[in-house]
Amino acid sequence: MKKVINVDELKVGMYVTRVTKSNGSAIMTSKGVIKGANSIARLKSLKVKEVEIDVSRSECLGEEKPEETANPNSSLETTSSVAASPLKQELKSAKAMYEKAREVQRKAQAKIKAEGMFDTKEFELIAEEFFDSITRNQDALLCMTKLQDKDSYLLEHSINVGILLAIFAKQLGLNKKIGLRLTLAGLLHDIGKIKVPDDILFKNGKLTDEEFDEIKKHPQYGAEILTKLGVDSLAIQVALQHHERLAGNGYPFGLIAHLINKYVRMSCIVDVFDAMTAERVYKPAMTAFQVFKIMKKNGSEQYDMTLLNQFIRAIGLFSIGSVVQMESEKLAVVTATNHDEPLKPMVTLFYNAKHKRHIEIETINLSSKRARDRIEKVVNAADFGIDSNDIIKRLILNQ
Image 1: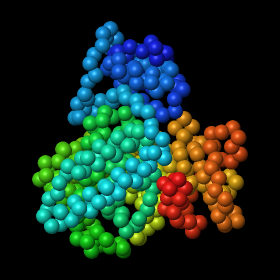
Image 2 (image 1 turned 120 degrees about the vertical axis):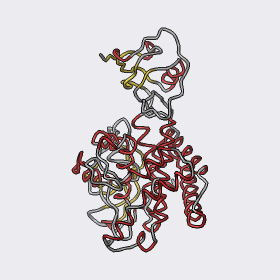
Image 3 (image 1 turned 90 degrees about the horizontal axis):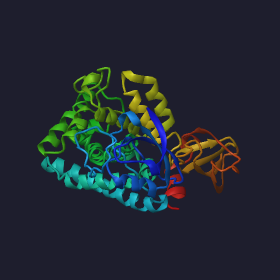
Image 4 (image 1 turned 180 degrees about the vertical axis):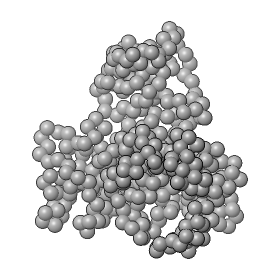
């Protein structure tokens, strides 16, 4: 049985399912038992007024338990709330973090080619920095994943997957240790591609059957490298299984649904999403909306639909950096998401699609009662001859 109570009535042992009323705007709450008074104090500090509890799952302890550290091998969801930092502030550190991750990836690839080994400690530090940044304000690093460089795809893809898995973990309310392990797994999931010959890896045209067979070996190559390095077991599993599919038509083993765990299912979704939204030398980028539509159409034969729906909620249909066409036929870039009203983000107008010309920059909060325009659809900036990287850098990153 579920019921809504005032936060002042909240006690240790109660099972919280969601926040129902809050005067704050930067809340992230996940399902779980309240372990101690600190959890209640955090909720109050973030201006939470009411929560919904599940009476049947509450422990009604009557005395305080010490705050517990979640088992990193457990999928238990824990309750946590954090205040977000301002986007402008978080973007500064996000840019530096992303560039640092690129450099660490470059060095690791060079070390593997030269010595067959690399130091994973730097990746662990990056994973923690990413996860903490996403906890503060996920829009900053999410914005960085929107920048497209077709010549750096292989370098940036794993960075993006790490970021997106951290955001996914946050959406599911997974504990920090699991979140860090997933972020690290994303950063390392494609490391095996370094052993695939460059003429196959960077081929512009269609692969032959023999070449594709070689590409399909990269999960095993990656697992072998990570095993030798003694990396976390979840990272090894994700590297080995991120191309498996629920219907058994994936590779390298053709595993079927019950053999693919929750975390691998998450990585499958994220890996495909980033690959399809990326610009490559042989294909243009697709919008997130287009990719979600395709993935939903494939349905449960390929992906865990419950997790896919959660991922869509985590990213949002109008996420930061998305280019949208308004009812006024003007183009705008989403410059800040609205977690309370996801369909009414902050947008910055920059182009008139009807008259095919740039216009004076204007920022509109679509949740305002005074807003006189609405989003009609998500579009690909390239279809209008516009460089989305330039728009993101000029109107978001350099503001």
